[in-house]
Structure formats: C-alpha cells, structure tokens
Image (tube, rainbow, N blue to C red; front, side, top):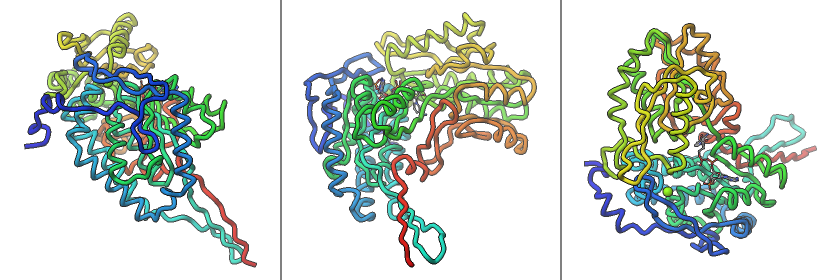
Length: 497
Ligand code: NAP
Ligand code: MG
C-alpha cells in the first residue's frame, strides 16, 4: 500500500506542531517587532498558527548574516564535492520527512494529500538533488584567442540571492530557486507567500540538519508589502528570483531601479492556450484539457485556461470531459483519494466567483459547474467549471482567473486558432492537439510561449527550462539555464607574451 493510503493523516495532523518563527543565521527567531500574522487551513477555514511577521529590520538582519556567510567563503569555497554532499543529504532528509512535509503543505494550501505526497515533496527533493549533482560536473570555459593569451571565462556566485515565491506550489517553486542558488555557492533568503510558510520552515530545519552552514539559507516569513518590499529595495541583495503575479513582478523591477539595480528574475502569470484541432485524439485530449485547468484547483501559472477548439468537435470534446469533471470533484484534501481540494483563501474564492459571474455578463454560458460547494466545511471549494461561447476579447479570456475555470473559444481555420492563442499579453505555455505531427510542429513554431506541448500538457522535467515570453516574465527556472540568474561570468585575461 502506498504512503498516502497507509498514513492516518487526521491523527498525524493533530500531533503536528508546525514551526512558526523566522530562520535567520541558523536560529529560529521571532520577528524583531514581535508581530505575527495568521495562517489558515483552506479546507476548514480554521487558524493553524500565528507566524513571525518579518519586516525591513528582519530582512536587513538576514541580509547581514547572509552576506557574512558569503564573504567568509564557508559555503562558496567548499570543494564542489563537499557542497554537493551537503545538498544531497538535504534532499535525502526531505524524502525521509515526506509525510510531515506533505501534511504541512496540504494543511496550509488545501491541496490534496495525494498530490503533496506524490508530486510536491518528491519534486522538491529531486530538484535539490539535480542541482547538487551538477556542482562537480559544470566546467568553465577558455575563449579561443590565439597563442599569446589565455582567456578564462568562469562562473562565480552572484552573492546574496533572495527568492520571493507564491502559495500555489510552495515547495516546488522554492526548490527551483534554492537548487541553483545554493549549488552555485550563493547565500539565500527565502520569503514564502503569507498563506504558505509552514513547509519552508520545515525545509530550514532540515537544511541545518544536513549541514548547510548558518547564514547560507534563511527564511523570512512576512507580508508582501513589508518583507517582500524590503527585499526588493535592499541595497545589499544582488539578485531576486521572483515567482508570482505580473502586477507584483512589475513592482520588483521598480524596486530594483529605485535601489541597487539588483538582478530580477521574473516567473509571472499566464493565460495558456490549449488548441484542440479536429484531427486530435479526442479521448486523450479530453483528459488532458481537464487536468490542465483543474489540477491544483486551477491555481497553476501555466494552467491550460483558454481552450481553443475547432467548432465541429467542441460538443464531442465536452462529452468526453464530463467523466473527468466528475472524477475531479473537490473533496477533503486529507482523504487519500481526493484529487481536487480547496482554493487558497476566502478572498481568492470570491475573486474566482466574480469572474464566473463576469463571464456570464459578457455573454458566456456556464457549460460545467460554476458553483461554490461544501460550504458546511468552513473551507473554500468550487466546482470544476467551463465557460463556453467565449470570445478572446472578453475579460475572462484575457485576465488570469487562477481558479478551476476554463474558457472555451471556438475557431474554424487553424491560422485563426494560432492568432487567438498569441493574442494575449502572456506567453508562459501553450499546447496543440493534432495527430498530423508536421502540422502540429508548424503550429508549435508559431506559438509565442516558453513551453509548447504537442499532444500533451504539463509534462515536465527538471532538466527542461521553464519560463515565459512577453508579460509572463523573463529568465528561466529549471535546467542548467537557471544558473544564469544566480551567477556572474568573469573574464580573466592572462597575457602570455
Ligand atoms: P503574488 O501576490 O504576486 O505574490 C507572490 C509573492 O510576492 C508572495 O510572497 C507575496 O507576499 C509577495 N508580494 C506581494 N505583494 C508584494 C509587494 N508589494 N512587494 C513585494 N512582494 C510582494 O502572487 P500569488 O497570489 O502568491 O500567486 C499567484 C500568482 O503567481 C499568479 O499570477 C500566478 O500565475 C503566478 N505564478 C507564476 C508561476 C511561474 O512560474 N510563472 C508559478 C506560480 C505562480 P504575500 O504572500 O504576503 O502577498
Ligand atoms: Mg494557509
């Protein structure tokens, strides 16, 4: 029997005592102001705990210890094999604490325990492992410059890096920043989203156990306009790796311009088109269209949230999606068979409901779902929803809803489908379903998106880069390309004659 079926999650939840202090310089500490903020369980609406609310003073303290650790060389000057061994130990400890980490993630975000156990925690451990394994395999360069000089091109850690992350995949997205930043030898300050701090604090405990030196990895919980802004404006942070909304990403560019021109990596929102042609394998496409929008309650940056479907097959596709909508009906996230949980907060649930209402005012029809459910639990649950009769100029087709709401737009000619797909300020991901692989590939080449799937959606691997075109951001997470955001290239010119 699998871990998810074997464990008694409810009794484990009762005995759990989540950490709620900041982790700075190797110590768990209260915020200097003594202030706290609450975190709630989205499936019950109940308070889990109060967490240290860090502000500019705590951020400054964290930057000072991170800078001291960096300058001391205690981490960056370790032999590559030694740094690798410590990060590998950390990833192993994450695996050994699978149940506790998964439970913290599920209680804090409302995502099903099945997903936390099988996806979120293992992906986090694997990302840290993958970057650890890179450390002693990445070579520097020698520029070809003739016999009179030796021109070395070496990568150096940039210094103090901060990661500011959202609440939808706290462990996974944090690991995409932690992995390359620490593997490269930087010090790191992680600011989790206010709704999802608990798993980051457990990671910190395990980091220390693994032997990561004090000051190299820090966690400063707090609110965006306080801790987040203080990070953006701090004069001694060299790079910020941000994942979140386009609106806040824009702020980080402003913070950088107003302070020390720190490097800013942006992984932002999306409104990813999912094109289904009349030549598609409809049975397969139906399952993927369903998961692409409803997985994680639609709270996924690259969710396939705009279905662009050939007019002649729309009804057939919808019929094939109905069993998936039933299977993905939300339930208690602690129930091992539940596939869809709760939305992150009451405010967010209201925002998604507002869009369902707005779509109808704009002329769309509800084809699936549309209602808030399970209100007796105190949690925030919505039915898997599809709006049909949507045009690409409606707000529901242009703005990121970030909930389980698919908008369906019909097309007649393939060129029209491509034009609709590209008519968006976002460009994070896209997919096309088409058995004719030449045709599919020609469409893929025209799609302006950081990831394009042909006859799939959301298939990922840590060794493939991930990030956006246009206002979905710039720079890439994952793969070796992620090192570009956290390293400097140094040219050392040695004259030989
Ligand atoms: P968000 O509101 O932009 O918040 C992201 C982070 O920024 C949080 O830690 C937040 O802190 C902080 N923040 C908020 N306001 C700030 C400010 N004024 N100054 C500095 N920091 C601030 O995003 P979210 O609601 O957590 O997550 C949803 C968004 O993330 C969606 O747009 C989604 O598409 C995007 N996302 C993108 C990717 C990607 O890889 N491209 C992946 C996942 C999610 P608080 O928690 O305290 O607000
Ligand atoms: Mg929470």
